[in-house]
Image (cartoon, rainbow, N blue to C red; front, top):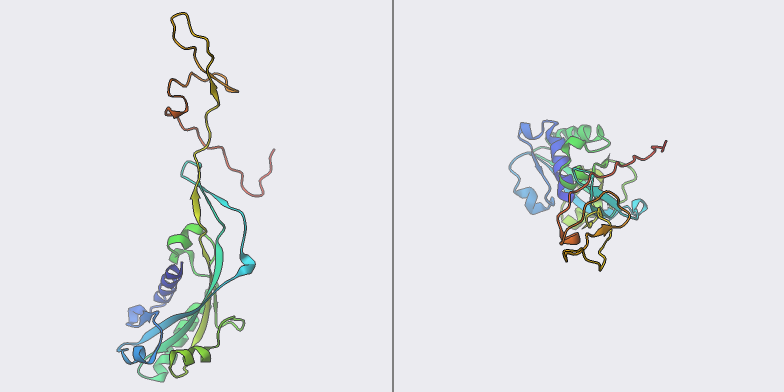
Length: 234
């Protein structure tokens, strides 16, 4: 999930024209050694804090359906995490860094969520909203000064960006639906000595299952129609 958020952020900044203008987008820790190796304007998104939002933790399990509507697995509810990034701009002059940072700020504050078109992998599969908070006053994460101190670098202008993203729950394959009734055979035999045909309990108009019983191949029936939330029965 984390790398999928990274790529969504990269795509969002790319749509603003940063990479087209020769600006690199990196996710490295902005240490002194890293900064010394920069030879091109760069926007760095450093992920430095990951915390679960326990208030959104769910219970139970949801059903996963195939293209025909049959239940093929059951998945635990997703768990939500807050990813906090330290966003900085790197260039040869402070004026250029501020220009880049301003462009990044304008791009990110214009979006309250990561656009669905930029989501990939499990984020796209879940189809849930991935919230984006830029330079918010309620970012529950270490202060920027503490981060710079831990990195061993000098404090510089930066943006705090927080993404609330779901981590897909564990899926467990479900057994195929029961489509056949119980089959019993009587001890009586037909006049020619052959065993009497089997009888399927509680099912009418169904042919004999054959000598293989339940092990025989069966035609899969259409899945029953699923009700949507809020629908009422007539």
